[in-house]
Figure 1 (cartoon, rainbow, N blue to C red):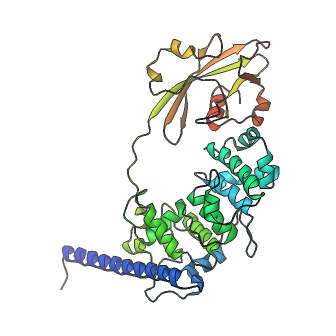
Figure 2: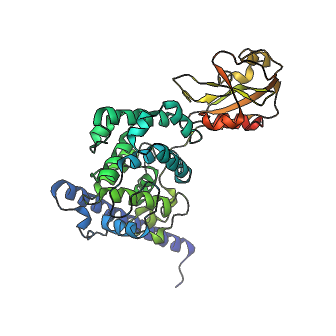
Figure 3: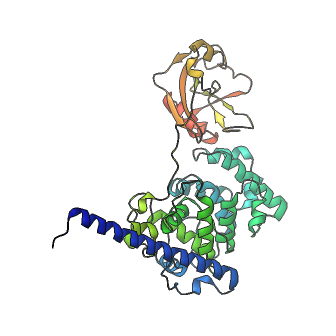
Length: 403
């Protein structure tokens, strides 16, 4: 007898529910086994055969990694020990930045400052200038401060313990775990965005981020083997970057396909669940693009503290949420000097972590002999590369066609 559409739908739902229940039970059993093994056994977890439940096996991921690992400029070749300085430099650069964007900067930094001692001895202004364009400039200041601390406190050698790494300026829990695991093969469990995605899907963690972070960290720690923890961390990063991608994950190629709860549910792309984001607050301001007849542009250095600290900027008004309501004459009160300022068409748009910014640009042409006001300097366009110009200010220069 032919079943009705409703009956078939009910049967399919029951099948999916059974698959989810089986997968969840398998994942829970595997995690419990991994945790017990870490607590009670000194044998390398990677040497342990897969659990009878068919849960995620670290050895399967490591075998996949040995075949498919990415070749990255900062990553040690198989069988070689990672350079702690390379790991530190790359991890700071990779925060909220793509591998593709970081590659050229990593090579340039390494060529200019081949060791942490060289970096510590460099003037901060040079480090900021070399960092310009990579964004999130507090990282550059932290990078420099950490290098100086490593030299002052540890004789130029990175400590290998997470607690000591955490005591260094600019080093948070993720970076400390990453350096400990990757550079020193300590049993640490760094959790980046890729690993968050892998763990969320593997166990179908339904709590939204960031509330789910402790559960994700605990799952990752329970899976981390005592043997090759650094390779295991990098394997999970590579899995997330190449297979368990944000959209259209290639589940059929994943070494953890079978125990993955999200795959069994048929909706891996749903994870990790993220709390809805509100609109970013908007601020507005006006930049004053002064250009002399000889082509020099007026620039200045931002204050030592705050957003874009010590970076080079085109002079501007304060960035205020009410700036759009001010009359144009009020903006000119902040101009570096009296001049015939004219508004350029359009505006410069830029998004920071916590707010979006719209900058109107006022342009003025000045005689070649015009002196720079106190705290400002004239810079020829060919000298822009030596300035610590953030992306926002490069946009302003491009808007005025003086880049």
